[in-house]
Length: 250
Image (tube, rainbow, N blue to C red; front, side):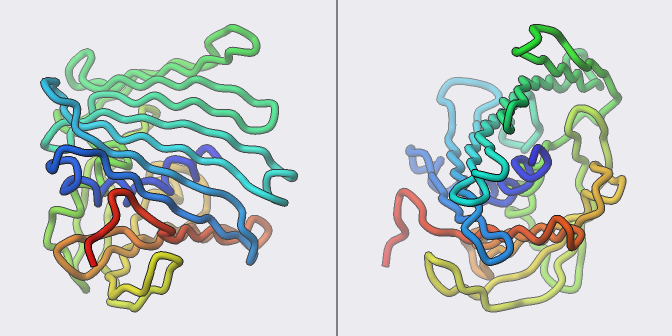
């Protein structure tokens, strides 16, 4: 669930710039389904921090629901700060998965050209992992990378490469625009472009999985669906846009 919590919010942050420029935060609500069950809820808040540099903050909350929560209780929180160029400055990740507790902190460009990763176990009151890696002058976490993608004119059958890092590894990840599709979600029916972000299979994460994101095929580039395909014994997780605040004008 650690990887899922990060990835399910990638494209969500990509849609929020317009609302942030208008002065208020954008809040996106997603419903997670796995094996035809309501498995969880994801909420993403994205806003500008006035008078600061970096100026943007995206926050994620991920919680399992119903039977999924009975099997595997998750209550995770993630927050990233980045600038107008989508260059990440830092992220903080609070993990609560069953009895597991972790507090993860990553700082980029401190010192310059480095990402510093610290993972702390609050139950045992000890640092369990530290790491420092080389990164480009401007690197994105997953949220900032998809926020940048939203501003780019990438339609099928083209692709783009973006520098991404989770603090433990850095990679030049390919994002491929595959085809146009109609997507039906609890919030409506949308004409969208399906993208595949190649972050798994030892690119940024070792897990054998595929990540797909659907952005509306219009000027909003609204992320309306996210899907993570994993091996059969784990299953496929699909997140569908259930609502947003402020609401879109009709």
